[in-house]
Length: 311
Image (cartoon, rainbow, N blue to C red; front, side):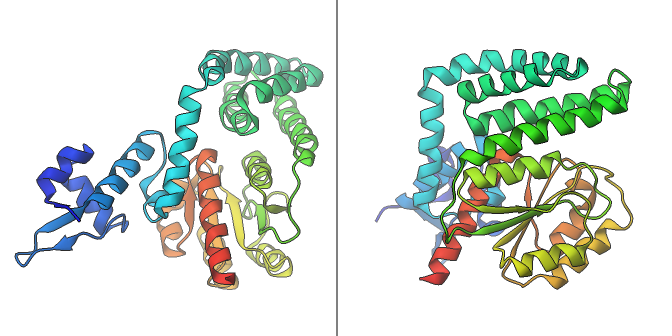
């Protein structure tokens, strides 16, 4: 099999030598051979893998979440990107996203739940269910939060937004069925984190991906979360952390939760507030989910690991 030095590898992959070394040392993306003088040599397969990883990161995937995926799974992710890039409906849909968000914001201000649900239905047909969650619902929630902070949306309007969206999702998610032996995901927010829509959206996305989801509601202490995970024999726990971003009690809650959970049970944490607790998240080996689009690949990894373990 052909091998290539670092200079040729940078040319073939378009990655800098620094990036390649970081991906190798920090994330284990590839394991090159070494010459007697300790020079790295990359095989054709490793070149191909680096090219694939590079393309995926350019499309928004985080290297820490995909670096150790098998080649077959990386290929599937690439296929998904290729389909979305060549499907004409997706290109047309991109021009409609902004209008969906603006119309939804108007419906929220007018407490017009029927119009809001009709907009969501149309967005789901145009973008697909995952596109609705990521490209419309999350921006709508963020816009409602901004409007509330600026005074354009009252507290009643902010509460109505949560209620309307939860009701819509609760109805729409019923169409997704799960297998009897599907993996189980417990979803909630830690104690003190009262903004729950991010967690609820994550639960819906997981159910669409074939998981049994156990949604516990917001703001639960570590003992209750761990108890539910053990009682349901969960394969993973998903938490959403949004606000506050500087809760002095949350670090202790996360540390206790990790202590109470089995070592092999995955702990996933997403939301805009995660950076405020980065040190603790690293300490408890939590997998951070920067965007809802990165939840599905992470769930796939857990599911594949579960199958290999059972096999």
